[in-house]
Image (cartoon, rainbow, N blue to C red; front, side, top):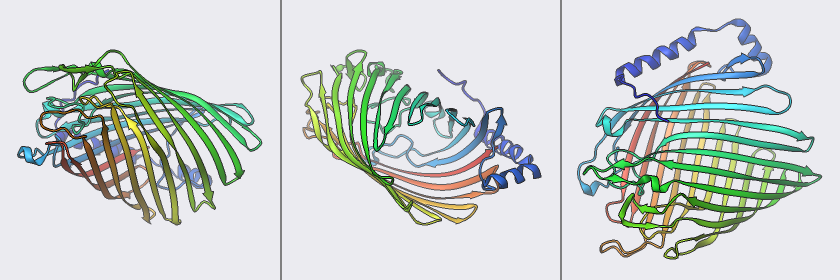
Length: 436
């Protein structure tokens, strides 16, 4: 799938976005305002369009971005390339209004045009999906979803070295989970299946990188048993099986002459956890367990260790929300001699409603990427380890329920012990959003 390439320049995009937002603001009526007050909906919430038993909520965003390092390059390699980027982001959400069962649809797009070296960097991304909820019995339900995503791999990814353009790939995600409650015991079981398909890319020298060798399925069936100690406290056990199945042998960074590997793998993730809600002031979910991944290629080492996650939400005041998370997981990679990455991360974010139509937000995150089984590459014979830092701050202003704008700043930093793999990126974004 590939969207038609837009020929408009950045000024045309800006003008179109503003006109579209202005059109959305033009319609209003006293009847609609009265209806919203009766339903207890804020004057700044998106209204949507009633269509039978569904509510259609269209939107159009224009994001103006400045980025200081579009190729996520190490500063030691020379002068960095910056650029202005115009993002045109139309989308729509459709939600059912049924008393029982539910059916929802969404479509998000991101059509990006670069002011610098556009032919090498412009992209068109699409995320779309449908999900449903079926009330089978009084205490049981079935949830399912399907999504299709047409995406661009970030330039900083170590799996697309020396590419002239970003790697394009798409994913198809299928979920199906059944949940049943019997007294205090809850059982949830199902499967997630994700398909990854990559497109080949060219290097500056005209060599084709065989990214299609990364095509694979990732299956993760799981079962979770919970026990409700009290209405606000639940203990649970969760077991997840993992199977990564590649279509073919995977070329190192897309170059067959650099070596190929059988990256098929199986593993599991076993967790014991506790979910809680303390009077709505603090809610959270915490678990600890063990994760394991074994690879079909006997040149790869087995990856295993203690893992878990923590998700917390704290509301110190009615106008302030603080969220935090910790995670540990195993990721895929195509690096030479590397079985996979052990990822450990933490994040903290805060939002504050300064006024009804002014929201402030700030956050920070850290992720450690430990490459397991890294082989000798040139004179570098140590295991690769990346520390990734990030921070953001911003403010959002809502003119009314149809039009809003927000200004934000984001900082990214990767500190790597592998030669020429560190980078720093600064981004400033001004977003204009129109919705109905």
